[in-house]
View 1 (tube, rainbow, N blue to C red):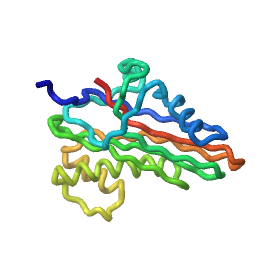
View 2 (view 1 turned 45 degrees about the vertical axis):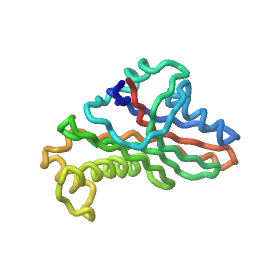
View 3 (view 1 turned 60 degrees about the horizontal axis):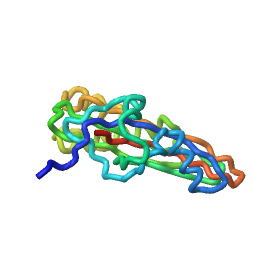
View 4 (view 1 turned 90 degrees about the horizontal axis):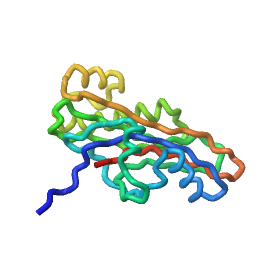
Length: 183
């Protein structure tokens, strides 16, 4: 019996697309993120144990065009003149034998920094709860980040966020942020 698929590598990417058709604007965002050539299969956002976070350039060399690729994908779209974001946050435990967390966040009206900080905080909060790191969930993001650093249990938190402002002329603007699983 073969073992179940367990990704060994993961990379983060993002993109924005604009078109008069909503679906085409999404396809353009996938192109912008350099993942349009894959068949994306959405998965729940868990960072696998023993998985390595790699650069998008390294990750893009792994899958072949047309290959089914697992992805945790955040997306957002508008045809109005509004700020929109899509963000993926990652929290990886120091003990690589444990799984980490990936969060997906999309919003209107937030800056890229606000949405990215929120996604990163959400992933780290989810990981902290299973690692038994005590903190008050009502404390600020910066205060929790200091607690995580002091705990020495969370080694990496990252995010990738794409923001854009819709044109407001009826053209669709789509943004995506994705965690792409490889090998």
